Amino acid sequence: MRAGPFADALAALRPADAEAARLALARQDRLTKPAGALGRLEALSAQLAAVAGTCPPPVPVRPAVAVFAGDHGVLAEGVSPWPQEVTAQMVANFLAGGAAINVLAREVGAFVVVVDVGVATPVPAGPGGHDVPAGEGLRLVKSNVRLGTGNIAVEPAMTGDEALAALDAGARLAAELVGEGADLLVTGDMGIGNTTPSAAIVAALTGRAAREVTGRGTGISDEVFELKVGVIERALLRAEAAAAAGAAAGAAAGAAAATPSGITAAGTTPLAVLAELGGLEIAALAGYVVGGAAARLPVVVDGVIALAACLVAAALAPDVVGYLVAGHRSTEPGATAALESLRIEPLLDLGLRLGEGTGACLAVPLVRGAARLLSEMASFDAAGVSTLES
Image (cartoon, rainbow, N blue to C red):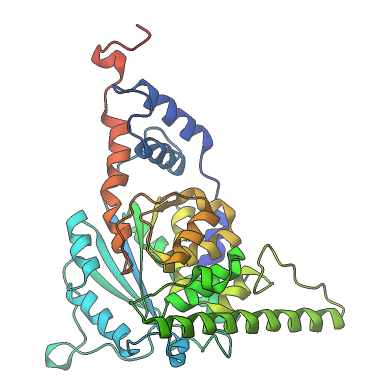
């Protein structure tokens, strides 16, 4: 791995603190309630303690949402009825404060950063022909690696160097946000057609069949759904053939053949899977979650796009999983497959499939509440409340 922000984050990443988690669970048992009565919030509070390395953990007060935007060449296959220009139009909408994620971020007091890591068309100008000005609590970061990915059905999404550049963009932003005082990172995404590469990555990294992890995305018809499944199957076969050819060439040259590393369809390293099948915003999200974990911050994860990125991040750095808080369960089947592979349980299940970070943002109050309960709730002894044993 070449030097850069992502490599630095990998080097800095440490496992979450199991002893802090143990102390948190022991503390929960002494609080004024029946043991286990706060359900999932108790496990979440222990995870937050493990992430911070202290019990009780700090209560997050400065959440930051990073919305990574990129376009996808696979759109040429007809996998979505929405035109590519909508990605850039939505970037302008984010900056104007008019998208769902803006509304929910304002509700929880989160700062929103929009990152152009691979938008293919110009962002529409605002009034007077000028760049759309970022509203209060908003910022645009221009980290465009290339103008959209290749069509994964017929060619790699990107080169290995481009994948690393996008990973660096995500890790760099995480470090910058932490330096600015962010204490909770939230994942967001935007990219017309991006459920297709996400499903391809999920299939490759979990060993599931394409049909099993492919969803309706923006609400496509049965006909388009069948086309989408076929496109993903073609992409997986192409990537597998490319991996086999690369391994054979390496063996012929006397090099060691690539090790599958648990990947079934693409049959090679996680970075190669990302380059063959992924998206620039997916790569940047993987860098972002590793960067957040390296800084010992909880990272609240959104739907299938972010979860595909987390599969890549976990394949590259398994310790990252301890820092991931699944905000919700998307209706996209690939999201459930990724959650099961990562062995993390979502906090909410609201039937969402919008993306942008909306489901993750809705979970921010639960994260705060779990930390606050552990730090502010009285113990039986302090409150003078009798326990069952007394």
